[in-house]
Amino acid sequence: MEDRCDVIVIGGGIVGSATAYFLSSNPDFSGSVIVLEPDPAYTYSSSTLSASSIRTQFSNALNIKISQYGYEVLTSFHDLMSVGNDRPDLKFHAGGYLFLAETDAQVEIMKQNYSVQLANDADVVLWSQSELASSFPHLNVADIKLASYGRSGEGWFDNADFLNGFKRKAESLGVRFIKDEAIGFNVEKQSLKSVKLKSGKKIEADYFVNSAGSRAGKIAKYAGITMPVVPRKRTVFVFDCEQSPQGSAAVNMGLLPLMVDSTGVYCRPEGNVFISGCTPKEDLDVDFNDFTPNYTEFDDIIWPALANRSSYFEAIKVRNYWAGHYAYNVLDQNMILGCHPAIENLYFANGFSGHGLQQAPATGRGLSELIIYRGFRSLDLSPFSWDRVIKGQPFLERSIV
Ligand SMILES: Cc1cc2nc3c(=O)[nH]c(=O)nc-3n(C[C@H](O)[C@H](O)[C@H](O)COP(=O)(O)OP(=O)(O)OC[C@H]3O[C@@H](n4cnc5c(N)ncnc54)[C@H](O)[C@@H]3O)c2cc1C
Image (cartoon, rainbow, N blue to C red; front, side, top):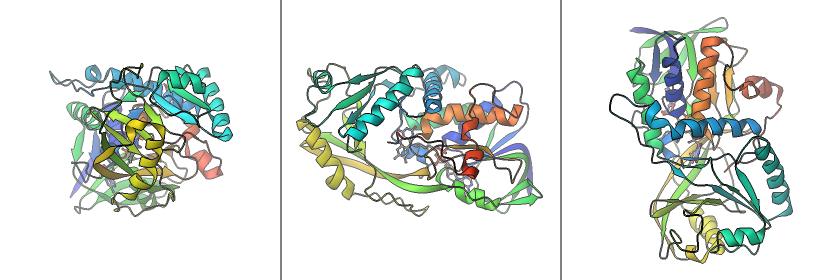
């Protein structure tokens, strides 16, 4: 059995769904779009297993601009994605990231990042140890030399509603979401003709989008392309405190920040509880199907770091935990966007590492422009092209949480 469309999007997570939305909502595009998604419940998609936060505190200027657009979309999402009377509510919490620097090397990087952030209109402030102590008095800052805090333009939100909002709006604009899995391509010369599906069907298209998240490398291989994107496991822990600093009079910022400790451990409020995580000691590639949480990370890395940082975090209890995959770009931890020279009609949007949720609006918009106009019309995302990957020249993001 055969089907046909103008654009076929492989992977209906946040990146695929945002791309489908930006294509279908563009008045200059009248084509048909199909999104393939084998797991419509999104049980193992990074988008639903994410920590769902957005920041401007990056080291790379373009990542700052991408998040500024992401923030714009998140904060007007209920209007942008309304379908009839249904207006999605992302429960967006404006709250800053608080990065802590302990070593001279961390201080140096923080200062460099800050100058890039300032030059790109990010509302970030650097605090000395005493300024940090007076802003968040419950924190033990004895070992902290410098902190950076996002005063606005940062926060956290509901990831499932973010994904569903794009998806439902795209559907209302005519996009078809099909439950199926890509297992290969029919290729002629330098062009894809159709995608083969696990169901035995095939779908012909003019343009193909690889938005398969941590499985992007598999899709690339079907087209004979090797990409430096691998699955890396990240475990998220939900905990509550016997005595919570939430709402404490000592906290003059109203809401606790998303703290990224000098150890790399992060923690942020989520209603009455907290979510936390860290980079594993050995950050190894994992099997595509390995979603077993690394439970020992909590006792070995997270709890000691948090207990050292605040006495409120000495008595805490894990309530829930899960593991998700970063689609980790081993070259530079940044996305790979656009076509590879070997195949003229396969568009990639992969390798977001730890920041793809907030980048989905700018990525979806950029990818739709590449397909419709053959070039970027809004934000120039060309530094993320395959060019630097092929040349082995990193377009680095140093600030990976
Ligand atoms: C624990 C964790 C915390 C994170 N925290 C943040 C954060 O705070 N902020 C942030 O911005 N980002 C964060 N990220 C990163 C972010 O979640 C991802 O970068 C983003 O969700 C990637 O979206 P995606 O659509 O590319 O991938 P996914 O959401 O994984 O979607 C890809 C989809 O492709 C489908 N697929 C796979 N193979 C095929 C195939 N063969 N055929 C068809 N479909 C296929 C999958 O089923 C999947 O649904 C975090 C990630 C993790 C794991």
